[in-house]
Image (cartoon, rainbow, N blue to C red; front, top):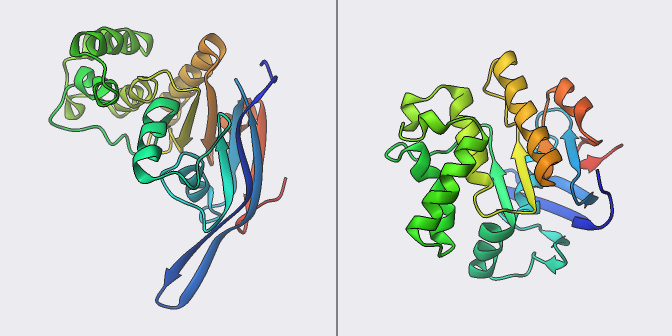
Length: 227
């Protein structure tokens, strides 16, 4: 791993939610730095705020206070339109549920981020074909999600996350719905992409084997980083 340079930083991130019972603090002052080309695991019990943290790091949610800097851009105060453009260009997302569009093929699902970014249909198709080949799905690119196995669906989700060549991919329990063998195949794919393309990954996971393979682990408890 080339650890020169920082791609992402979070400074004193707090996130509170208003509930019927009052204010619920979920993140309580998170500080985090992520280096380029790093594979970083974020671990901790369910409910400690891992998903909330990833959503804030990727601009899907806003902190109550604190600042996130992505590629030297302070993102917490961008407008919704500016945030949407930044997410599309600089961040890839892989979730526990693949969130593929059921009416579209694997190829079309992979093309969508590129079309939204303004690429031509021909260029988006060309790159989507390359990405699906990269994740071993050349012969499945015309299939719709319901015609694919769980592991294949997640590989399409990875290809989609990489569509606009983001510097960083945020993955929230990416193998949580997969059996052990299929999960390991997905992990191998992520590490191969990191080694070959230099893509940075921040992975929230309960999977001990996956966390141990990462370059570094950040453990959360009670809304804070504890180690």
